[in-house]
Length: 121
Image (cartoon, rainbow, N blue to C red; front, side, top):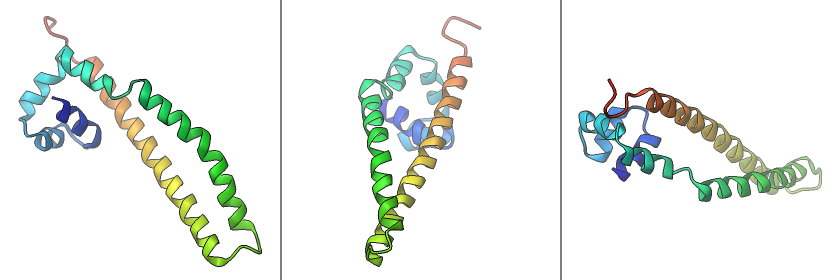
């Protein structure tokens, strides 16, 4: 079940996540209704993840500022400017991917919340 939860976060569809975890879509759907699944799935977003995210956010501003200074410094060597461009590009790509993952997660959470719980019809 843990593998399926991990694959669900990185897959585009439930079927893809199920296939990657080696289970059927029917089993995946059944697992999603269980309390165990909810606990495992939500466990991916506990305090450790938040602490890492906060540290990355606090350090990214100064890092980008340094890269920006190098990029605009007329005396900086061309290789340093190219490296600064690469750093800024990688940051922008990572930021866009993070936003896409966040949107996907919110969509999955909405779908999960809308699913009928055991004993309810």
